[in-house]
Image (cartoon, rainbow, N blue to C red):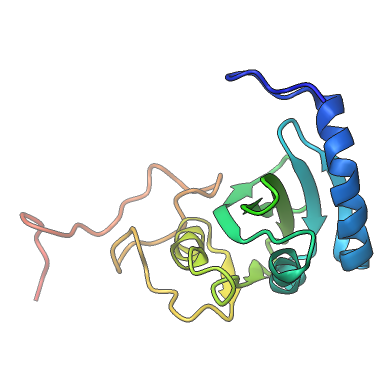
Length: 181
């Protein structure tokens, strides 16, 4: 297998070869929980059902041979007008034992923007999920504390949604703002 040169994407064929065993193990453990998969430019990607994010993540963390013990990042994408399902929650996992990465994608419909929370499995998910909820309006079932993290309480809307109006006005807060008593 060719080694990746710093600053360059790893060879796609080498990634496919390395990830083939991982994919077979994942398919045997997760079965129908995997809707599809592909070899991304930098790691294997799985598309999973949003309601099974927690159970899939538990298997990724606890199963021998996988041991994805680190949730590196969790974010969302708004595909407004570009895909049939508007939102996608993206998880980046890392296995410190096996030195490998995995990306899981959970498509989330606009009609029911909710995913199961990973907070009980990965404490790092706490702020990630709060930020995603605040910026995109995606809820996380089972999360213990969905208070606002970045915006103030009176803020209206979800600023990272593609249809968020930049012309809209928000209530003023802080020093110098005129708030009526």
